[in-house]
Amino acid sequence: MKVRAPSADSRYFDVRKLIHGQRLHTICEEARCPNIAECWGRGTATFQILGETCTRACRYCYVHSGRPEEPPDPLEPLRLAHAAAEMELQHVVVTSVDRDDVPDRGAGHYAATIRAIKAKLPEATVEVLTPDFLGVEEEALATVLAARPEVFNHNIETVRRLHRRMRGAKGSYDGALWLLARAKQLADYPVLTKSGVIVGLGETNDEVVDTMRDLRAHGVDVVTIGQYLQPSAKHAPIDRWVHPDEFRWFREEGDELGFGSVFSGPLVRSSYRADEQRHAASNSTRTRGAVAY
Ligand code: SF4
Image (tube, rainbow, N blue to C red):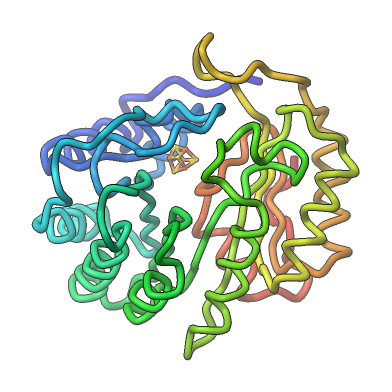
């Protein structure tokens, strides 16, 4: 796999200056995403709200884990909306660390962020990639959906057999499915639901298809599948490199299962070209898998 280096004639350095200037975080930097030169070069990024420290420690994730020292910053939604407007984003993607230390798990902060974006950029669509809101799922979902994000994303991350090993005791495969299905039930508007699977953690190809089948059975519209890259020696090792032909097969299987959009490829990440994923799913006749790998 080859990725581009940041280029001076792209928008990379402008995006970087704006994000750092507004004291914002992005999952692009926090998770060392390999696509950063491409995405920031196109003038897009995925914002990470609720701080830099995650209260979980998933075995595949590079985001810093520990006890957050600060409560959510009440001005962060406004700074984020300002940055999104400066970037002229038409589709704003927001994710976060897990905040098990906060009573509402950060749901109110998500809602405030969505509202701030919609106030500043009324034409833009908003996608949220949320944690599992452990223990307050129903209330948290209602809070987030009341702000009407166009896309509700919650990553299932891996197949059922590996879920606990990779996500720890607090992670739940069935809980993730429930959250996705419940989001659709609770929304009083046609929200798109979305989820992502990382491959190369020890799963089989059939288990990946089983996971896609579970997602479809819970009404999920968009799925992403991408290769795991071990972020440090302390993280789970790479079990295998999935061949591009296998990614193609996942896409075909996903199409057969009826997803509105299937993005499957070595460098696909949940937020990779999220605007195109949403567009493909919203106009889903045969536009599925708009990016071919
Ligand atoms: S794929 Fe997502 S996380 Fe990675 S650089 Fe692009 S927007 Fe950021």
